[in-house]
Image 1 (cartoon, rainbow, N blue to C red):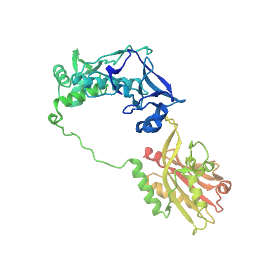
Image 2: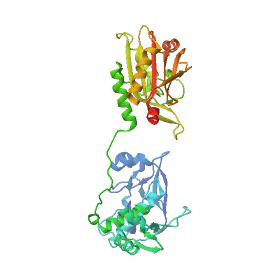
Image 3: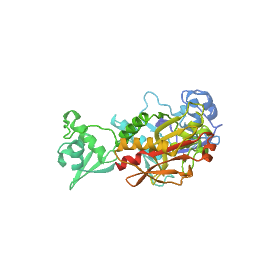
Length: 408
């Protein structure tokens, strides 16, 4: 708010709260109104009135005798209205962050000072680390001359940098190879050495800085995971499997092991992030038991699994293959899987016994590549099938493509 200083009758101004029935004459009004009426009836009150009202109290700036100067952030009082001929002004800035408030005030008063005004300061009480306002503190920001040269891309010496900064209205001096810059209070955008480099570049003129041609050239290519994804997808289709897509979110009742649970799910059906493609594939099969047999499907997608990262979880690219029929066998899917892995990686996988309770005992295996476990394969345990309402035998595999990409 900006007020006519000559119309303020007391030397002491108080920032406090007042009840909503407190009366004053709002700006551009002729009649006395309560704070509540101002909030309800004026345009400013309707827009901003409810921002700061708390427990039926409103912030207020008062003279020592209790007369209202302002009800921030709503409206000033008619008493201190700026009129033609006003020469001396009092500026109040309010907000929820003291640093932002003081920086805003510094910018306002220095802008007015540039137009010929003289800045006056007021003594501040009850704020231990602030005696006067505006503070108008000049900060010192340091930078290395070499750093500024490298940032801009041209060779500069210390005296050149000092000269360019003076063109940007900043005084500076050298201490060895360190440049110390006195930053005006209105330059709140200057926080560190990179900001000084930007100002030097502007002082030189961007049009005078010649771009340099990059000495090396790189050609884009697919990530290893992307190439592997494409190879496994094309080979799976070629092996007679039909591609399916399922949602990353699923029902936590279907998941086992560690998984990410949503805090505020829109639906209980989608309250967790899948930690395996097996569960969503079994749910898909349960909904397609009337399809022509055999049902042979695959999906390649990401799951979220535990890790040692900051979040405790990471994304992992996997492929699931499944066959549902009136009769299925371990060997039926193993032959397809083996063919796909060999053609995609050029490496023969091996198989070791796996006692995962997902599978019928003795009918499950771990898929190994270069001595590392890169997947699982087996005939699904009937108890698991019942949980997913699947009434036909299923053989399923899940391959860890992210891990394979790191091995080949």
